[in-house]
Length: 239
Image (cartoon, rainbow, N blue to C red):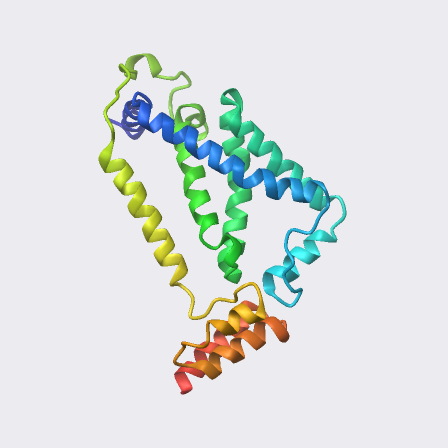
């Protein structure tokens, strides 16, 4: 059995189970809820956060705010993607439009250790990927391994299943837990959103001085996250 037929078989088996369908609807609602408030903030030309411009993310968002009509344009696209997700007929288009936006937010958040979306953005990427996989039958024709131009729905569809997929949802819970664990422990020191929050983390640290220098580097000197993180790493090694 070639790859296309194997994926078709797996996909239609999943599509026939109501619990996977409920999970798809849940993801659409959650993702839409994540974009509508932030999108409207941009549409109404309001600042997204009150972060200091010396903070890496604050600097980026402040610069983005001053890009003229590009700033509200992003907001309109976010709101459009959210609305498309909520309408069953356009949900696939919404998932496709949503993905590059949330992937960009995820990479940006991880790059600067931004507390606001450090955990949520990777989880949103995973939720978006699930929706893209859910609509595999509509998107598969752009895949290089697909040979046929006609869908094989008729030969693969089966009766609706009510069986609860315990292993799948256990895997979802494990994935969420691992994502949170990995993301939150991937930094020697997080920037936090304010200088006070940053230095509060240093109180219980073994390397208090180096920790305080990192906070000063980010919030007062306005240096890049990579530069401050590298200085922190070197200070720990030389201690």
